[in-house]
Image (cartoon, rainbow, N blue to C red; front, side, top):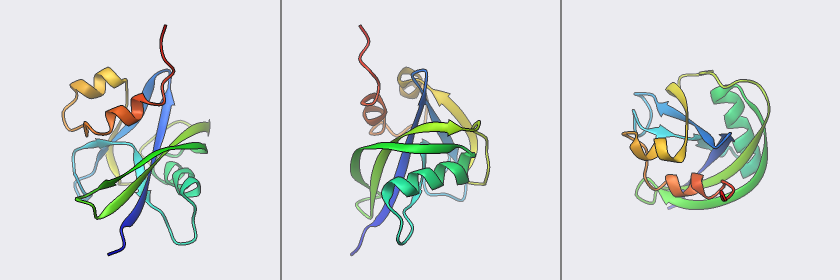
Length: 131
């Protein structure tokens, strides 16, 4: 069985990460997650991360580097995490993928219901160490 290939974009500003509350018609409705989506045929992972940010939240981004990858949905999909830099735009609900957007710190993620706990260390891994 071929796994569905999915990309997640890590968007960070001032130690806060952009998460969207997944819409009722999506897998894991009501859960907070990064901008994400399937990698289209002929598209690279970095291209998919950049496209998904534009389609879902109206941000023009540049993919910086791949952070990690992991199986999700009981092994049916492979999620590729990419750190991206915002080139231009302000995040807004551009389509029906999410019902709400929120900038959260790692600490806020830990206190928020319906945040995937396995995502938190991935987000934390891109932050510079504090003195």
